[in-house]
Every structure is written in structure tokens, then in C-alpha cells.
Image (cartoon, rainbow, N blue to C red; front, side, top):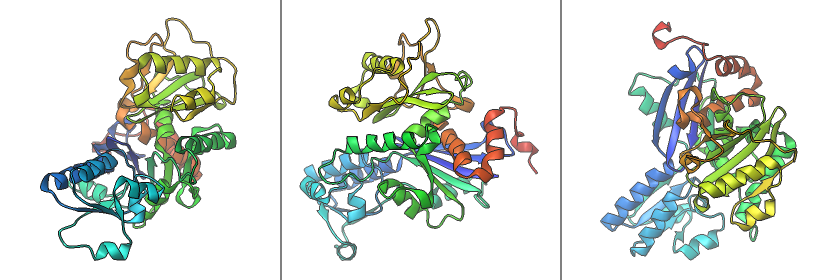
Length: 380
């Protein structure tokens, strides 16, 4: 059974091809630039050449691409964008226009002058992944599923804080279920407010396999629970320290006991450690995190988690995990199946077992038994 998993972040998109016949650590993988980084680089090339740019296609992750578009405008060169592409930067098209971007219809975009450089916006490009793997003799025929993780703020109504809107969504999902797979959906079940996930569904129209979508932040945490030192079932703190966002959970036998989310750029090591200690104690207040320009906190089970002296109190993943280097919490830097960069992919795989139960058996055997499977040279 083959399942293609992609964790699409701000800096990289991490790709893992699960093959139920192989040891997990023998699965084929790629770590390549994130789609927003690809657009960022192409925009910077257009700026160096002094060319006008059209952003077309679908809603995708912003960050680096938005910063490059702003630099292009400040250099004095036009940026046009179709509505769906423009929403990569802000759901409010009036805010897009205030940036200086000219929002155009699809018909208007088609009639722009030939010297306008067209950049296609999309988070998921199945053809590109398939072509890259094909160069190494790997074919994506007969996939049992494709699972994709993206960070989705959701489409907040006008006048509603993006941060509050996202954290309300996190709270609602955990009220529905404390399992981290509550953040994963089959394509046809993605909530309408999750516009970035919906855009991935649209981009995957040529994929002949069931599609699973998941928020990337909890996917990384779920993947980190498969680190050998994580001791599943014990109450533990987990933190995914991403390039732009940090999401932490206190997990116990019944799932998530509490969580908070903040902007990584607003944190340093001592501040993050303090938030984790308050999460462990069950005293962290939503209002305090939001007032500090974070997203918020939610603790459905305030039962304190004692932090043992001399032992690791938190399992950490994410590209900015070094923020906790040297912390008195003695963090375990998770390397599930030998690779921190693929924690989100492993979380996606675990969530797929919940979302598509008919695939659960082989997936759970692979995830629970590091001796499961064979080396690649033993395959028929």
C-alpha cells in the first residue's frame, strides 16, 4: 500500500512516500523549497529584471511570497493578482488593494500585456512531485491515499481577528474530539472556512486517490509522538516550534488536555519555557496569550502535570526548536523514525488511519512496530 504525504510549510515542503512493505525508515523522501518560497524567489527574479508580475491560480500560503510582492511594489513595479491568488496574502481584497496590488478578474488577467510575468499560485502540485520522483524510477501508480498538511488561518469575516478566528477553530475541533486527528479531514469534509485546504482540494483534481487534508501544526505534534523517547500514553508536553507559529499541547491518555498557539517571532527561549510551564500547570490564560499577539490558549483539563526534575519534560519538533536548547525543561528533540523534518508526514499518516479506517491496519502496524516491513531490495 502506497500513501503520498506532504507537509507544506513556510520554508520547506516535506514529502514522504509510505510503502507498507518497507521499514518506515526506508521510505523514500524529499525535502524541497516550500511553494511560497518558490514564488518568493521568482518574484525576486522579476524585481531584478524590472518586470511587472501577475499572480494567478489558487489561494496558497503567504509569508515569503507576500514579502517579496511588497518588495516588488516598493521597487516601483506593478503586481496584478486574480482574487483567489490575492487571498493568499489576505482574505480581504480591499486590504490587498491597499498594499498596492491591482486585483483583476480572470478575463482581465488574460488580456494583460505579454511582458507581464505570470506566476501560478498553488500549494500542491502533484505533477511536479510525480515528475521529481519519476527521475529516480519511482512511480505514483495505485496510491491508496494522498495526505497534505497546510497551516490554515481560515477565512475570518470582516472585522474579526485572524488570530481569534483560528484559535476559535482550534478550540471547536478539540471540543469535538481530543485526538489530534480531529484536525484532519477527507477532501469532501473540509470545512468551508478552511480556504487554504479547499484550494489544495481544487489543486488535487487530477489525483486518482482519496485525499486527506490536515492542519500542519498539529500534524507535526502528532508525528513527534512517534519518537522513541515520547512514551505514548504518559502525560507529556509537546511543542511544534515552526518558522512562523508555535503550537504546543499537553497530551495525556485521553488526548489533548490543553494547548496554546503563538507567533514564533514573538518568543525567545525563556518566554516559551514560561508558557510551557503554565500549560503544564493548567494556569495559562487565553487572554494573556492573545494580548501578547499570540492566538490563544485552551485548557479543557486543568489537572496539573508535574514536571519531574532531571527528566525531559517536553518533546519538541519544528525548525525553530533550538529556542529551547539549554532549557531547564530538558527537552527531547524528536526524531521520529530517524527524521525530525518528516514529523508532519508521520502525523499525517497516523491521522489518515483515523480518517480512512479501511487503511488503518497496515499504517498502525508500521507506526507501532519499527521492525515491520522489509528493506527495499527484498521487494518483488
